Image (tube, rainbow, N blue to C red):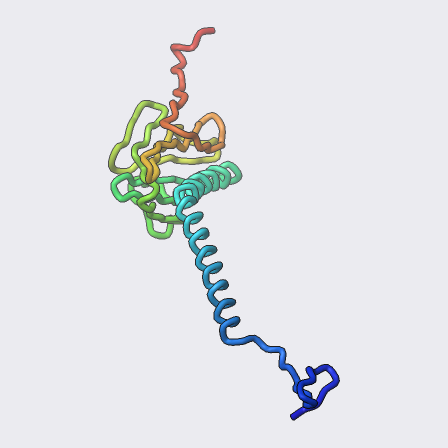
Length: 191
């Protein structure tokens, strides 16, 4: 038995009190920590689920914006291909005069979309529509060859549009099936 001046005095014998957690206290702390961890994990998964559509839209826009920025600063040409059948997109650097064939070494990004982000249609500013198959946006030093919009749908069936304006180099995101500006033929311009 140890004798200490900071101990309780009982019947003339001094006992040292040990400062330690009991098993019950340890279990309570572990249960509380587990609950807090589960709540945090549930919040993170909910946040990631909500942002899944937005993160895919952001990837589409940043890929297109990177292509037009790189093309405007060099003599390179790029092609952004949206495959509505496969629900994917591809960015390639055009290196040959044969635009129909995509060479493996030209592919910079090839990405599938999740079920939370669906490409519904693509409309070009010359009036062409694509509901299946592939739609191609080409970017060169002078800008986009065609403008248009990519209509997307989220998991709640809400529609959104990625708008490509050939007059400027900015790709924008709009809520709804956005009406695009179509170029006016020269003979229809009033002077």
